Image (cartoon, rainbow, N blue to C red):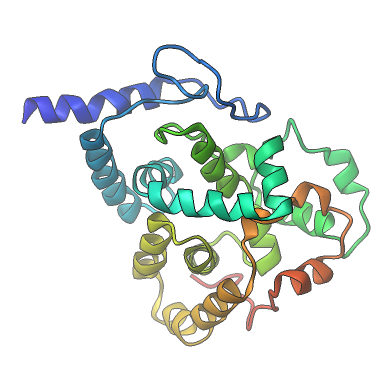
Length: 265
């Protein structure tokens, strides 16, 4: 038992003690030291991954706002699904370009001045309004650490960094109900176990009124849109800032939400 606990704690200690992510630096297949595939990589054995997945799942279910635990859960359970998503990106011209260029989304890579100068109704203007209204930053996305393949590490990093774009497209705020709706959309889109678990168990914390609205209206809407939309990882969002939000939604087959969820918990 002691050996198992030490095996579990070793990667967690490295996780807690490692520096912040270089959010403006693309993940590349170069040497970063003994056994490291990218700057933030923490190599782990299959057993360590199982233990990390179990521990992070418990913490994430207890506190959905522990984004670090949600991130660990996604990395330790999604290897096969990430391969499928990577292959989808390779088969799409825009997705393949993203994989080749490895763009990152952070305050150091975004031209905030340009975004603030975009016209009302554009995707970039709507995205910036989402950040301001919800008081969130693209720099809050945790760096990938436990994926033992640098290309798949970039895929899950890209998924995290476009999360706020999906909020913008879906018209969902960052309250619990809004996050659950986005997770249902992401679960259908990606199939990542972490998204499925969040979608299924997240509603436990909702009020009876919000739960009824979620089941009767918002989940069917999110699932329908998730099935209809092409792979959202294949959109080069940084080159769509000037595009009208409604035009981008139409291109992706995303419809307006059936109701406003601000203020609902």
